[in-house]
Image (tube, rainbow, N blue to C red; front, side, top):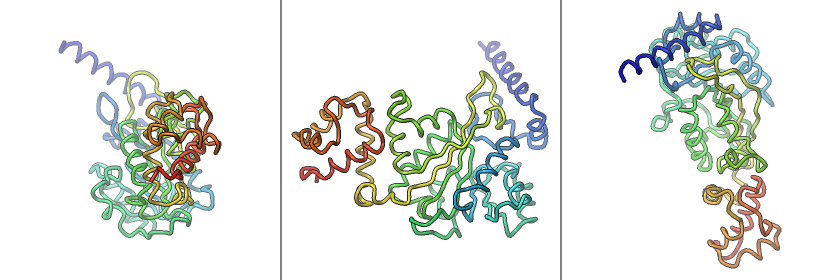
Length: 336
């Protein structure tokens, strides 16, 4: 068993080396910053957008951000600081860049950048994606904006599958409360995500129920969602050996300015979230029998209002129709 294990590790190392050796840009970066190679096997916890293909796409969509790039760019896992250097040197946007990086191997390079451009760059030596208990420290000095104003900041990150689920579900949990990152106002996101997560975010009722879930509805109700492009997973570091992986998708998420009006009042947003989550557990369940369990006799009234049809399933409802169903259901006298 020990021999087999050693052989497996050796094979994974060989595959990882081959993936890197195919691109001289990545080889040069790994020679300068060995930490970018990551672990020898397994799924990397963090990803770094260090290849020009990813940097080009990020820069273009920051430069051509609808209405102009937000005044502040928050870059999680800044790594060697290639994006910040590019944004400052190109001079195509005037936004300040706050880099978040906790790995000691990258800090000398990032500190040198801040010393060279102190008016444009700042460094926080911490992990933005693990911000749960240190929010005030990590986001200090950022001026909150009214919710209906344009976003004050955009958070840029490349998320591994290990990180994206926890971080994005945390975001989805905090948004209806207007807390954490959203205490600043409508914080926007520009994220490289896995094909799986992008499929969940953008899935429609016509999609396979495997992708169309409660989070699909909540993302599409709470955010303006745009898929802006994709970049091969092999061009992100650390590389991962093994079978070829689907490309990462660049997704822009901007909270809706009318978010607090969706459910009738800000306090009812939590009820909307609970309603969606409970009813999308079994997406093949019929709408009326599910709701009759909550309020017996509500079915005929909902049918008269056009909220649903007799043999319609929960998974057949679009995000807009799920919202309309909640609005009508929560307006029933028995609801309160």
